[in-house]
Structure formats: structure tokens, C-alpha cells
Length: 432
Image (tube, rainbow, N blue to C red; front, side):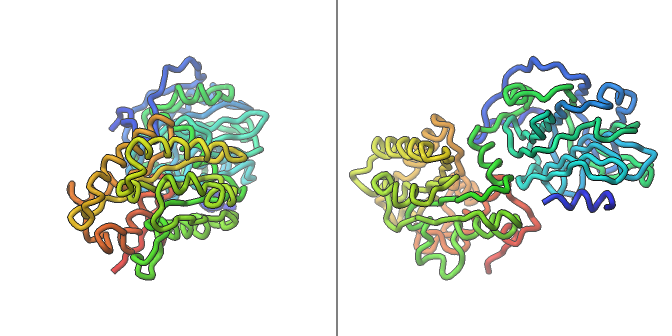
């Protein structure tokens, strides 16, 4: 198998500002055998040659490769760190960003020892830290301090004898003496440890730390084990009437996961249990019917548009209900993952009883922060899109998103869950 086909075959230098997905990181105590603070921008031709230090890592059978980077383009193969045999065409150990996905591969004389790609994407221009650990237990990818993919295979530098070249931002072999798989973007640091670091140690090495639940959602997306995604809410989630025959945001998300991510993700199931008119109190009361019955792994909740117009679910009750729903989700068998999605803003001139919706959105944000729940903030995104005002052109009746509004909801959800791919039909869909 040729080198590029292997890459395709598997299924700002400051730290980023914390978001609802992240927490600040701490100080590291792990001591690497190789460590370079590079802070270099690469243009698709440039690279950093670290070959004189290859002896520090050659032959390691276990350890950790850690790279902090941000991308400025999307290419099919971009090397973060590669140790290779420059005299042969197919021997290397490489960590890459390939079409946005993280990749780790080990080959010797053309024999693939292991080659894995995540489904989650990291070419969003933000600063990320990826760590690949290899031990007797197998290989684990960590992204921003959280494990996102694990396999039982355990090949490391020792699995590719004859290594004589070590490069950042390129791979080098006998067929490409000047290099290939060049990187575009910034690499601020590369390090190698001679043991598999713990999750806590990797978190301390990371420039940003994802919420634990963000890592768990990424792990569900990267796993081949079938999962149920439960998306619930009110008429907006239901997609009733105002989609005008087009897909709702839940249906767009289903297409992205169950079809576009390929097998075996088509064995995942996306269930929409949104019910028109629902409030958080309704979902608490009907939790077993609308959530538990489906044995979900991830539970998305978008509610508040009706709570704000219901006297019995004032702000204090709404807050208490959200907290209770998070507890109920996390108490499900297997420990399901809660996901909050704020409702879109509405035209308060047409719907004056929902003037205080922004206050309920603020409460959802506060509960998400307090309980470390991943939050997709549509309300803020829509106002930003509208220049600070509600984009009325995305609403069918001033309250419910129309088909264009649902596509905006879907893209925001897809992007925030690190599934955005400009080559995807869902992601590039345009509605006339």
C-alpha cells in the first residue's frame, strides 16, 4: 500500500481563551526525553529537522507523543511529528492532521503496524494539544487533555526499526528526499515521553482542557460501538410545521453521523423526542418515556422557549429543573452524557410573552458552567449572526426556525461537537 493511501485508509501562539467546553490547565510535573518549544509557523514547505535528537526516542516500545498546534488550512495529510527511515519508502512513526482528523500511524517496510484516524476534527484554527500514548494496554489519543479514542494495538517507535530522520511539519523517505505531507499552521511544542502519561498528566501538559463530557462525546463519535443519541426539547426540536418539508436540525445531525461518518456509525441511532409545547417541567415528569426508554448515550436538551411563557416555571423552577435533568441523565445506566443547547432568540414584538427569554438562556449557561455540561449556545450565535439583533429571516413565524434556521442550528451543533467538514454535504448544504 502506498504512503498516501495509508493516510486515507483509516476509517495566535497564546493559549486559547476558555469556552463552555474548556477549563484552565495546571502545571506539569512530567519530564520528557525530548522537548522542543518551537513556536513556528509553517507554510506548507517549511519544516524543523530534529534528526540529531532521534537517538533519545529510537526504539521506545511505550511512551507518549505530545504536540500543540493550530492549523491554517485543511489538507489530506499534514505532519505534526514524524520519525522515518529516509533510505526506504515506507517506514515511519507519524502523528498527523489528516483532513482535519488526528492520525497516528506506524509502518515498517510497507507493513502497517497500526493506523488510526479520529472522526472528530481539529483543524478549526484554534490551539489544540494532542497526545498519543502507547503502553501494554494499547494506544490512546488524547485531545485537549481528554481521551477521545482507544485501541488495543500498541506499536511505538520500536515498531519501525531503522529510523534516521525526525521532523516537525514534514515526513521524509527515499521517494521524497525533500519531504512530503507538509504542514500549514503553527506548532508551538513537540515532546516525547518514555512512558504513557496519565490523563491528569496530559491535562497538565495541554494548553486548554476540554470538559470531561466533551471528551466523552468525542469518544462516542470515535468509537465503533453503536450509540443512541437522544435529542429532546419542544416544537423547535420536534421540527414541527415550520421546516416546510425540509430536515430539522436533529435530522441534519442524524445524516452527518449515521451516513457521512460511514460504517459502523450507521448503527448509531439519533432519536428526536421533542414534543411541541414542552417545558422543562414536562420533561422532568415524562423523563422515563422521553429519555430513559431509549437507553441513550448522549442526551441533548433544548428547552426554555415555553418555560419563559409559563407562569409555573419561573426562573427558579427552570434552574432547578435543568439541574434535576442533568442529574437524571447522568444517573442513566452506563452514565449518559448531558448536552445543553440554548434556544434561538425570537421576535419579541410578535411574541411579547417571551421577552425574558434571554434571562432563561443565561440560567442555562450558568447551570452548564456550574455542572460542567457541554453547551451549544445557539442564542449567542444567532445574535452574533444578526449583528446583535434577532435574524428574522431564519424564523418561520417569529419564533420557530424555518428550514434555513434549522440548518443554522445543525451547523452550529455539528461544528461545536467537532464534526464540521466542508466536504460534507450537510455542512455545505445551501437552501434557496
